[in-house]
Image (cartoon, helix red, strand yellow):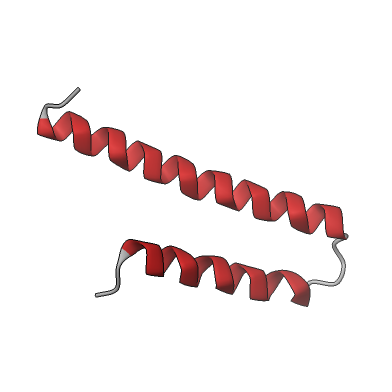
Length: 59
């Protein structure tokens, strides 16, 4: 099984490969979509970190 950073890198690269294929969106739309995806992934990681700390009784 691959590590989490490797999995995140694979997901981000696959999303970047999909974005140029859609020619109907403008560059601003593509950039904002990419930033939202990064924020969502970061939010999920933060939530998992908080959950793990609560589960271990550190919070």
